[in-house]
Length: 154
Image (cartoon, rainbow, N blue to C red; front, top):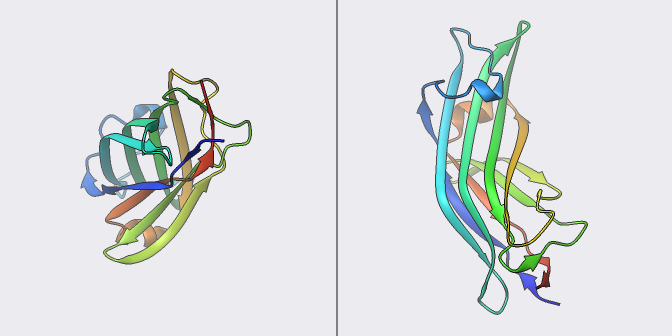
């Protein structure tokens, strides 16, 4: 059975304005802080070197705010994914996202599956992870890791 290779891309995080985030429901207060990063296109190859999956417009949005008097930090991972002539298994392995401050790993965040019900079509995906506020404050990059998994070819 064909398999996708584990591959990674680095998304640099930089302080940003809290503009364009209405669809996230972000509570805006004086202390709200935002970090953003983006990768436009990212390919995950099969073990034979052919393209097996495509990721597009990977957007990382890290938010620190206060809601109902409680401070919190969250990381949103958003992207579109395309099963390039490969069908995902019913129980996929998903991805891992690792927050870093320089070379120091802060947090490992993982998803057990992608929303990719059929091959040859683009599907939007959005995931949110709660992180410690100290990790938000220090984070300057996120490594997006598409995990290895067996797939079926069309």
